[in-house]
Image (cartoon, rainbow, N blue to C red; front, side, top):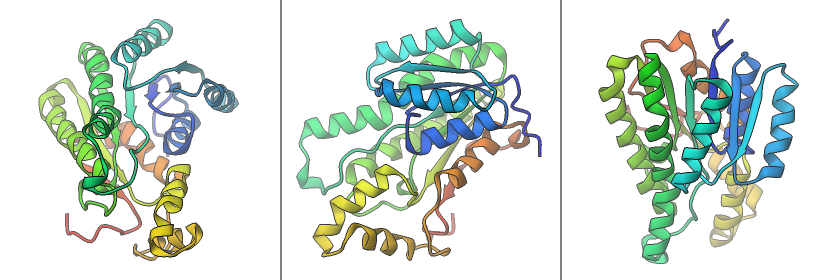
Length: 262
């Protein structure tokens, strides 16, 4: 299937590792030019080299997405380099695990900055360009916690729910401009983030980290956790012309983990 991404430009946030990296590679595989960013310039360089092997262009810009001025600089440099941004994939790392009484107000502020404000910053800077060009795709990577809160992840549960509210609001406001906004909700996926969560949470349950991951795998219908590539395939579809009437949705990529009807 041709996803018609040749000559498209995609900015993928937090793309030096994990889901962001998988999405950047998946979009590049379909012919899109890619802008990648993260705070780790060394990892960015390696990912950029990997993307360019797919015979597409890549611009790597070290960026702290919680810093609005750095996000402004990221978007300015991207527009100067490529002239446009057709696809925005928002993404960020997750805040620490723990319960409500474990965290200070400063912890809450950091979580909101990381998960919600970084998304707002990117949308604030990029949507005006999409409005001017009369089209755009915004895909926000969140978590299944926006549909079913995850025990021990209260910071993520709350901050990511704000992202879901933002996505639905932007969908309604900018649909007239042919800007499609969707969120994707990963369940447990084979990333460094999930491996670290397994380490953090397994000791409390008297398990080894690999036993914790297996326990999570058994919670979903498929009995295994996803690969980053399986996740990226859905994002590539949403970014493509094949998803031209799909907006305002929250798609779970969780192997059947969430048990609700909707």
